[in-house]
Length: 132
Image (cartoon, rainbow, N blue to C red):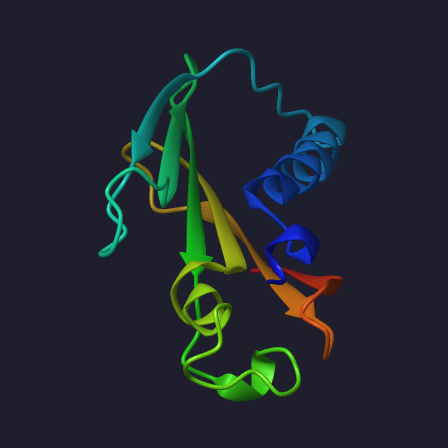
């Protein structure tokens, strides 16, 4: 099984730290948020699929975790239906993270899209971060 070599959800935290550092350099200080976790994965209601962090200033940080893919070309080489890891790649593997920042009551927002790119063995090869 390839689970041991697959990135887990904790990959999000170093990326968040980098984004927070960039925003702090722009004069945005986050402080301590109140946090709401969303667990609405269709196959497991204990899996965190999103988080909303609200700061005293009114700034909201919304994090959405995208799991799985129907695109078999992104699966490890030779992985076919019936293999123990096929369902993991189809439904559970973290494939993207979307992070949005906005102030309650305002339309302006900053957004980052983070795509996780896996190699032919199913190991995390790189990430692509797009600032929108």
